[in-house]
Image (cartoon, rainbow, N blue to C red):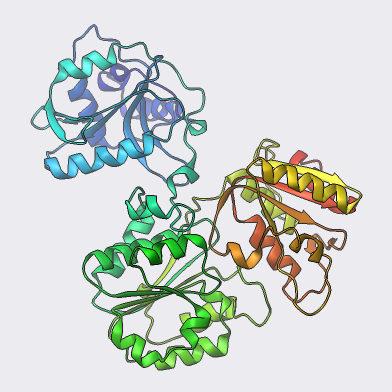
Length: 493
């Protein structure tokens, strides 16, 4: 755990390397030599009697790994951020970093004001980000003014930062996305730079739910469009409201059905970039044929998806990614895997993992009742009444898509006009509720479901992984599933 520290304790410490390393470990800090010198320089430039306690050094936002050099929180709600530089990297880069820092710090609840500075030790320069967003010259007197405000300790900094708040969805927040009110993680940024700077070729972006595949893909599309390139996005599902809004703003997003009805040669001649999103949902033989048809494409072709998120056995799923990885036109460098989960609340993600596979045991502190809700009903009508209450209170009810031909248990929920699995593909919601009927059970620790047109397990998994912050399971006439859920949240198994 990161502990607050007095900067004088670091900047003027007079300890040998071994003891100082142990001291760092106690504080939860990992220093580079440069940073120690920068802090020492800053301390020497400030008044000797100034209270420099309660600074947090090198804090990183969980799951995103966005780092701040120095943070201090005041009792009046103000936040002070000081970035340290050994050399002057120029006002443009310094300003961009502070603007990005302000974006991340602005998500902290109940803050009043954010004061952002950069200190350059080599030339003793100090810069401040003005309220207008312009970087201006400053001096130690302004830093002193903010430091003199009464500071407070934060018992757990991680509780102030909600990682999912920083993942803008092009679908659920299209206007924010268009206004570029978002930032990418370092991993996403690296992938984006690599693809945008490439002259052409076929690329794969693979990642599990919550890793930011869609934001990355649409971010690449946005950049290419701003540079005058013609971009087509093919969504392997029904278009959602957010995509329709983007289309009204000049984007070209079509469904896979529409794409399949068009002449491929015409499309590849018209567009510089084609993105196939949710590629795991197309049939393997169709994907194989598509790869053959576009083998001579001179532009950029990006396949995005999650090998686990498919709803029918006839959909390619994992086999599609095996096909892509073995395609000679896709080099290892062009196959990008996103590993950093951002969207999903880690406690909710841990619960989902154990819910589908009881052998996936996790730390007892992983799951809190504040994030996972369980409601049990004997009668389906009572469950439906409760779902209406949730819907009226801002919860997103998602039902499993059912067959158009054969009767299924979930037909009762489809009639409620809630969103189904196919309608929420690629989307995310703060609070998600799902139905779990009596026909689910555990076999050798794994959740199994009834035989349905769309896989009962896959659709339930799709629905549950749409949750960003909270998840509610409405369990109907299934004591066994309830028992297992209670064991997960209490870790008594």
